[in-house]
Amino acid sequence: MPFLNSHIMNELIETERLYVEELQSIIEGYAAALDDPELIYLIPPSLENKKEVLFGNLPEIYEFHQKTFLKELENSTEKPELVGTCFLKRKEELQIYEKYCQNKPRSEALWRQCGDSMFFQECQKRLDHKLSLDAYLLKPVQRITKYQLMLKEMLKCSKNSEGTAELEEALATVLDIIKSVNDSMHQIAITGFEGNLNDLGKLLMQGSFNVWTDHKKGHSKVKDLARFKPMQRHLFLYHKMLLFCKKREETSDGHEKSPSYSFKHSLKMSSVGITENVKGDIKKFEIWYNGREEVYIVQAPSMEVKNTWVSEIRKVLTSQLEACREASQLHQKITENIYHAPMRNMRKTALRQSDSSSPETGYRRGDTGPNMRQKRGWSQRRLPSMDAEDFETIPSSAEDLSISSDGEDEGHNKNGDNDRYQVQLTYESGTAQELSVEAGDLVQFLEESENGHWLVKNLRTQKTGLVPPTVLQSTAEGVDLYSNSDIFSDLCTAALTDTEEVDDSTGPRPAQDGRFAC
Image 1 (cartoon, helix red, strand yellow):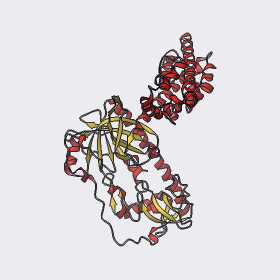
Image 2 (tube, one colour):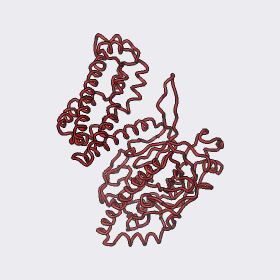
Image 3 (cartoon, one colour):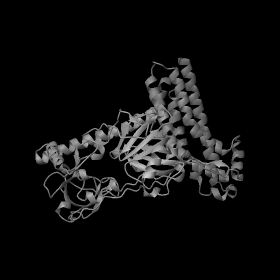
Image 4 (cartoon, one colour):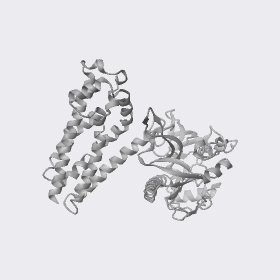
């Protein structure tokens, strides 16, 4: 076994040296040649000022391997059991491959335009390369894949020996990088999403599914069709949001283009619930939104894919529940320090006074803002958009899916004391739209945004911006703002799972859903 490991280690180091040499030849023989006065006349117009597009961050990859990674692998020659540590130590640096792969479609498109030019032929002749540049630009993608194969071979020969744990962790690291690279390649192909994908947190999963819908509101004919005819959707799961996209594959000039994903719909993870089993198909699971106002039956291509997605969604909801509890505990401590009374007593009193109830849980919920009946964000939410090709047929009135907003209540004093709040907890803004406030500041409520934050005006600084309502206290009533509302309604009412099955024989129906309270 030690002999086999030594043999694999030698192969790893030899191929690493060759890899570094090939990267060097690309940079010196092609990238640098773009600045060679003797070859300028051969450079095609389509290649001018496009060096970064063609080569991406290849110089950064070369520098890392030549100056750092190769040397560390060579230092492990006599002790192959330490090779896993090399990968773990450089886990962050290896993320540079994600950036390179994200640029690859642009690089390939540019190569198709100018790859047959005299410039590249002359560079290849000078380097005496048998293969053209495009083959060498694939080397980084091939190399990161090669690492996982070699680590797997070393693990086979190192069971229960020194360094096995590090090798297993190193393999997991490389596999995670490969997954991130693959996911990012799909993410950059999303079109039509108006927000910033970077604001949604890490991309955790992506994949294609059959999706059925069953919503409480919307055009009846569209609802019936959507309930029985599946849509093909590519789902992207982030920490903060789940995106539904339609995959589109096109060809151009005889070349297959990378697929694109047309954005259709999104769900905030803070309001999502999940039902693991749907009767009639073991590969189906259910995602529901905002108290089952929107229900999605999702059919995975296999049980393995289903289990992986259900597990990952559970993790997201669990982390949100934990964040909810921590915030609730912090809020209770602040409240007790100020009023010398447990928050739960104030909460019970408020719940008895609440004038609306949740059909899912049975507890009563009050308004979440002073102008909520006029500005209830979820009441104006659009249901998923559907293309004509999504189903076999589609009614012409699909645009009627928009949910009508609630009627307005009259007589609210928008500029009175009811709209003034005192900041109970200093808040530092994280984006340009948010407002930093300090404990003790007075603010005036203006309106509620779609993400649940409030647009307020700081009466001390006269600045306007968004703040989370959890840091505010009403000045009019003399009690905590959240004694009149459900403190963390979105987070705390999102169910982690429902193990009871939903009968899918005649279309999806609501099930008894387990919920977790703060």
